[in-house]
Length: 110
Length: 115
Image (cartoon, rainbow over all chains, first blue to last red; front, side, top):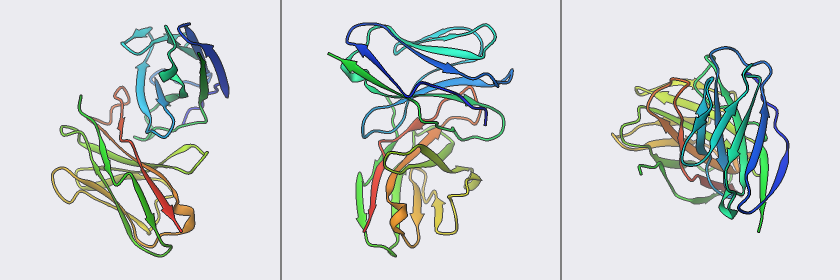
């Protein structure tokens, strides 16, 4: 599985934007970039995914670097409910499971 | 919005006992998965299942584990003789396809405590 690197933790003030970075320098041309999050005591929850172009949905935006070696998950206005561990995961052709790393633990400060 | 459900939410069992964890995947999904997460550790893949067969399994999924789709809606994980180290959250997931452009939907988990 291709590896990703994320900061262990980040903090944000409530109602401010949050940019969660992910490095994936060994990404191959056909790997998809997926983001999941895990709220306390819950199962992982799909957030967004993309291949090359930036993506927007109701939860977040995904900005993908032109060389695809990094990406950023953007929460436009952090709420207390967004406090979670955020996982950046590369989906390749080697299997059908998701490989979860340690993710970024996001703390939202009221 | 359709969701994956799991029962029970918490299961306590004694070492050596058999447990069955149950999941109801999203109804039009064809691919099913089990993951586990030991307290404070990463989410780890156990097994994937399609067309009544295991399609992939990890090293964790040894002979003590088995999966089954006993009817058109349930997907189960059985641990034949539980050990203390089986204590963990177990998450079921399902997806429409195996394509890497598709997401997996996870259930809320079953907390298994082996005493």
